[in-house]
Length: 325
Image 1 (tube, rainbow, N blue to C red):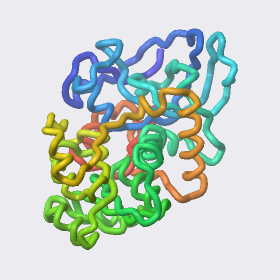
Image 2 (cartoon, rainbow, N blue to C red; image 1 turned 180 degrees about the horizontal axis):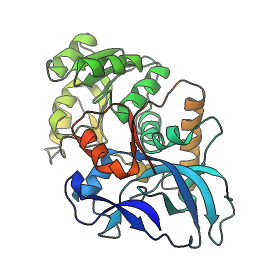
Image 3 (cartoon, helix red, strand yellow; image 1 turned 30 degrees about the vertical axis):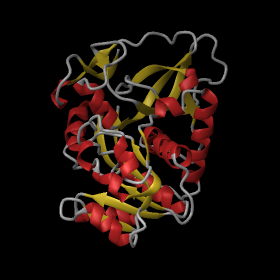
C-alpha cells in the first residue's frame, strides 16, 4: 500500500482524497517509480473538475508530472534499471508515493537537475520548449507577449524567450508579480487589472505590435490578444485559466491582419519517443546552462494537495508548485 491522492467524484479541491492504494508489479513495458517530487499544474485542475475526463473513469489518482527513482522494471524494458533517476509527464496518476509508468514516457535526469527541479520542470518546461522552439520559433529581435508572465509556464517562457534575444512583454496581476516577472527576463510588465494591455502593448512596441502572443488565460484575454499581434503574426492559446475560448468567426483573423491561431498540446508534440527525447535534451541543456532557472516557489506535503489546488486556482502562487510524498 502507498499513499496517494484520488478523485472519487469531480468537483472542487475538497474532492482530492488522501488515502492508501495498492500498486501492482509493473507490467510489460512499464517501470515502477518511487516518487521524490510531484508537479502541480492547471491541467490537474481540469481533470479534477471534469473538464478533461480521466481516461479510466472514476476514481483516479490525480497529477500529470513527477520525478523519482526507478525501483522495479517490468518485462521487456531494457533502457532503465533500478536506481535510475528519472522524470516524466504521464497523467493522471502522479499524486502517489509510487506508481507504474510506461517506460517510453520516462526520461533519465542529468546529475545537475534535482528531483524538485524536475517535478516543476517537465510539464511546464516541455510546454515552454515546444511553444518557443516549434509552435512559433522565437528569434532575436522579436516582440513577444506572455499572459500570466509570473505563472509556472510564464516564468519559464520569459526566461527562455529573453535568452533567445526577444523583447518580452508580460501581463501580471500585481506589483509583486511584476517584480518577479522582471527578475525572470520580462522587459516590460503590464498590470492587467489596472491597465489596458492592448494600449500598453501598442505603446511599448511603438505601434509595431508583437510577433506572437502566448496565452494560457483563455476567455478573459481573447479576443483582445489579437489586437496585440502584427499582421501575419501568431496567436498561441495553450491554456484556459479563466475559462475556454468559445467558438468564434474565423474571419476575425483576416480582419486583424491575416493572423494565424493555434491551440497546441504537449501530448501531440511529444507523442513520438524520439521527439520526447530531443525536447527533453533541449530543455535540460538550457536549464543546465543556467539560462533558464526553475523557480519552485511553493512546496506542500502530498496530503495537502487540496490546499495546493486552492492556492493555484486563486492565483496566489508564482512559479512552480510541487508536492512531496
